[in-house]
Amino acid sequence: MSYKWRFKLSSSPTNTSLFESLISIKTMYDIAEFIMRAVRMLKPEQVSKMIEVLVNHYNQNKNGKILVMGAGRSGLVGKAFGMRLLHLGYNVYVLGDTIVPAIGERDIAIAISGSGRTRLILTAAEAAKAAKSTLISITSYADSPLAKISDVVVEIPGRTKYSTNEDYFARQILGITEPLAPLGTLFEDTTQIFLDGLVAELMKKLNKTEEDLRMIHANIEL
Image (tube, rainbow, N blue to C red; front, top):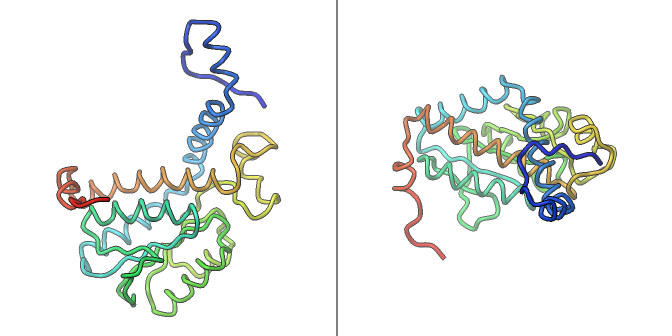
């Protein structure tokens, strides 16, 4: 695999050689490059629609609920996003927590699944639709079962863990044949960065400052 180092390395030949030999550093660089290229593949109209739904929900139905759903590491990405939505003033819950209430037609469900076929999340998404909630899906596949039942779909490029046939995202974006990172890492990392960017946009549209978020941040933590 060829690596294109675009930053200045240490002037010491020994340090440079050691630096370039570290798989961990090479992988960090390539994941970052993957994310940068993935950004250019996002569809602005999809992103704008998700932002529109979330802003309107805040302005018109602030007490309405948002349920964030994801399995495994995608679930951890969802939890991080859920925390930021809480800081922004949303009434948000994460699937799997013991205090999740019922959701209904004035609520939003956000489902995160690279393949769009994760059974647990697909079942939860179907339940959200049956309850007449607005369903937003974040997935790599617009033709997946999850995307097909969603009101809003945001396609996030990334290798998924289910099939080697789906690794073409990595090959398409980086021009390689071997995976850069195991299982769903590329999707999960790219989704995390995307959602962090979304938070910045929501802060601007909702006129929130960092101090506003800090005021809601937990003051009792483990």
